[in-house]
Amino acid sequence: MTVTAEMLDAHPGDLGAAERRALAECIDRCLDCVQACTACADACLAEDRVTELRRCVRTDLDCADICDATARVLSRHTGYGADVTRDVLAACAAACAACAAECEGHAGTHEHCAVCAEACRRCERACRDLLTALG
Image (cartoon, rainbow, N blue to C red; front, side, top):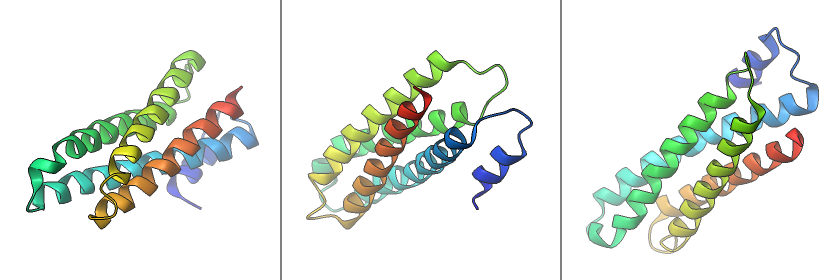
C-alpha cells in the first residue's frame, strides 16, 4: 500500500471505493511523472548535443509542473470542486501526451527519454481513468 492510499484511507470523508483506487493510482502516477520529467530534463541538459533537446527540456519541465499541481489538487478533498478537478485532470492528460510524444522522438537515442515517455503514458492513462470514474 502506498502512502497515497494510506492517506486516502485515513481521510474522514467518504470518497467511494472505486474512485478511491483510481484517485490513489492517479496521484501516484502524477508524482512518478514529476520525478521522471524532472530527471529527464536534467539528463537532457547533460547531453553533448543539448541544443537538439531544447524542446524536450521545456516539455519535460512543463509536464512536471502540471503533474505536481494535479497531484496536489487531487490530494485535497475538503470543499471538493468537481469541475476544477476534471479540468485539471484533462490538462494533465494533455501535458503528459505531449511530453510522451516529444520524448518518444528521442527514445531511440536517449534512454532517459524512453523512461520518461513511459511514465508520461502511465500518468496520461491514470488521469483519463480517473476522469471516467468521476463521470
